[in-house]
Image (tube, rainbow, N blue to C red; front, top):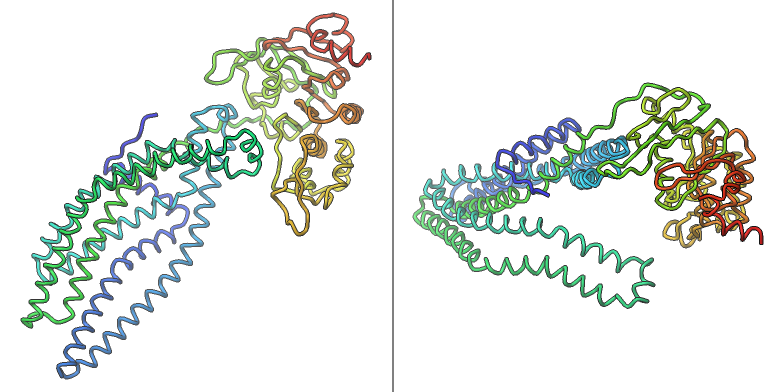
Amino acid sequence: MTKRKFSVKKRFLALIEASKMIVRVSPLFFIIEIINSVVSSIMPLATTFFAAATTTALAEAYNGVRFAGDRAIFFMLTTATLGIAYLAWMKFQGYISDISRYNINLKIEDQLYEHFLNLEFWRYDDKNTIDLFDKARRFSFSFLSIFNSFIGIITQIFTLVVSFIALYFVGWWLCIILVIAIVPNLLIQIKISRTQIKHWKENVGTRRSGYMVDQTLGDANYIAEIKLYGVVRHLLNLREELRNKDEKYRIEFERRYLWIKFAADVLESVVELVSLIYTTIQIINRSQPVGQFLYVQQIVSRAMGSARSFVMKINSIDEDISNLFDYLDFLNLPTGEKRNIQLNSHPGSISLKNVTFHYPNHDVDVLKNVSIDILKNQHIAIVGENGAGKTTLTKLILGLYVPTKGKIFLDNNDLEDVDLKTWHDKISILQQDFVKYAFATARENIYFGNVNIKPNELKLQDAIDRSESRKFLENLPKGLDTYVDKWMGDDEENNSIELSGGQWQRLALARSFYRDSPVIILDEPTSAIDALAESHIFDNLFAKKDKTIITISHRLTTVEKADKIFMIEDGCIVESGTHDELVALKGKYYKMFESQMHIDKK
């Protein structure tokens, strides 16, 4: 992957773009932060000025100068007033900032996820899209950091300008020697920062690997295996190796520049000392007030610190800028054309006409010239070996992918023209990799089948019975209100539990039944459920004659109940018919299920 390089102009434009985004979302926050940048630059210098004036007035008062004591008190009160005003401002700015940051992050992240969930489905299988989404998401989580860098740069520039102006009125030559002191350290800092950033970018994979090793070592679910296999020490050694590759190199690099940095720091200290000696001589000669010493010392020190901070911020924003452009690139990904046909009723037929399909960025056809007609309320089964194309077929029926060739019709409507939301509203699906809402209770897991209606207790109880889930749900510590993950809930209340694979599958079936859609797609829905429970579930399911049911299964007891069975091999429909018709053929279907039929006969 090509690494982006950013010129000064590119960085500046990126900072402007980030600022525009802030202004669009929260103009008040932008204004407050700009004001705060100015206040943060001026206030320390103003405080220093009055502190120096106080010192001068105190010295004059000590020497008996008339009204000097009054001036000292006035300057102290002014300093205290400025301090209180600054504290009040910081409280106000902090409150506005916290609220604004929350709202900004919320809107930026919502915008990102909404766009992600509206992409064309094929993009979820596209590595480049997912990589871009990961980068965009990283930016959304730290969106304000680039704006903070922008504000920080403005603050440091403003502080440097004000510092040089303040020194000019003390002595113009102080500005010159300050530049002489700052430039070497800046050049060194630029070199170090750029090398560190280069190292950081080149070792992203190293840090990611180290993070994943840490996750593995700290995951309670993995402890048994890694101890049993004796890989604990190996993983610890690997963790140390990865950490050394990243952190140890950085430390060694710092060591190589230790003496150069020391020399530059000495130069800065010498310049500061020279300016203070000059000021001291001026004070002794009574050409400068006593407080000028404090004033010069603070101004010089602040100018040097601002210069260093400025370089560090400039050199540290490349990654943020890169993430910003990734975020904008992601938001520019198309979401697909709007479809006009609204599906208002249960379709009378689902027809696949000569459908051929291969996945994006692949040339091998997964389905080849497939034609299937599924009538309203018909129960069909799709069978075949793993990888034959069964699940891909259901994804095409769902409209998640568009056929490479051929068409799919809902009645006389081309599925490519149908508003998918109106089609999906009429479907419930249970796949092998169904969603486990581990953060929710058993009741909520079922309710998630249809969140567009008010919770319906009668539908809930019916779904529980149809999925053969009642017995295990009633035995949960808190019944339906039990959290279905052991890491959730409250230990004192004993309201969480770890479900088995079969229990999770029944809970997912209950969610599908609660949805109560006219079209049901089941992809290996009972692989972790015992045969007797599976038989009861499908007896209940097929007893309802007002549903179109499409089932993918390797279990004969499930498949043989279908009105029609389609046998897929290598992406092609090779046989179709009822169970008895296919058995009579003694063909591929018969060979696939022969062993189960013999078991059943015994």
